[in-house]
Image (cartoon, rainbow, N blue to C red; front, side):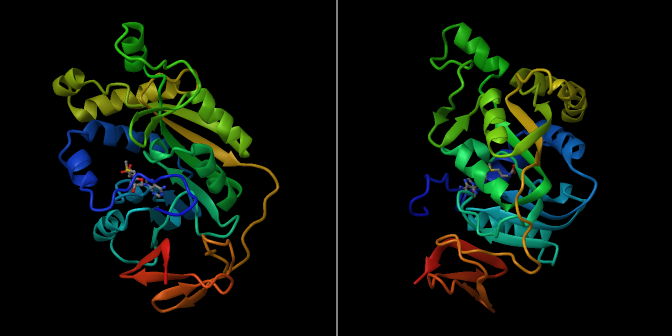
Length: 298
Ligand SMILES: C[S@@+](CC[C@H](N)C(=O)[O-])C[C@H]1O[C@@H](n2cnc3c(N)ncnc32)[C@H](O)[C@@H]1O
């Protein structure tokens, strides 16, 4: 865990991709997310930051971008992503904390955060970091877990759930797993100069019996249609948002890329297996194609 930062839900050593996606009966949710992403992604872009990239499940979907930076706190998730996507100039693998992004201001023209905000105890801080590294007009696709979903409403009304889905604060239903209210997410985006352009509601049919009866591809198609109501109401467990970075912010200078997550100094001195901060002397390893900003080495 990084010092002076909120706690991190650590996926180090986790078999999340295999147990949750590959063998976890979530083909429908995966396809529904693919449809949502296709709708929200711009046709092309230069440099995309995927925050909480995990094992790179969504990365191949970012087809229009020239280069993609996969950032995750877990090194083992990034190793799995590397096995899936391979080592190439198109992908840059970075182990770092989303609360302390190791990049200069105004570097990216796109960012995504899918199924990751729900691990953020201090979500506004994470959103502030995202806005800092975006150029003006950059696109940000944020997925969040919605506390105002139909199942939660029903359980609350029937007295089977203590917390109210209607109130604005986030709910921690399991340690470091949070559901958010759509109004609160919209407020945080606005406060951080991220202008909401579109909302898609996703996973309308995340109900065990429906998933058992209907094929995943059929449910995903139906979900694709229902997603289009997302700007009117948000009652699904998952919501995808597209925002645009607004406000007067600088664009990163040519060649500028990393900054020290400890002291914010840039540029860093790049050696074959290490990055060094000339200001605070922190050293960060580059091992097997993964930049590691989690903790500086002594
Ligand atoms: C539920 S997984 C989602 C992975 C991927 N986005 C997907 O949808 O398949 C959440 C990911 O967020 C990462 N994560 C959680 N907190 C983080 C933080 N503070 N900084 C960077 N990554 C974080 C975890 O390591 C994990 O890989």
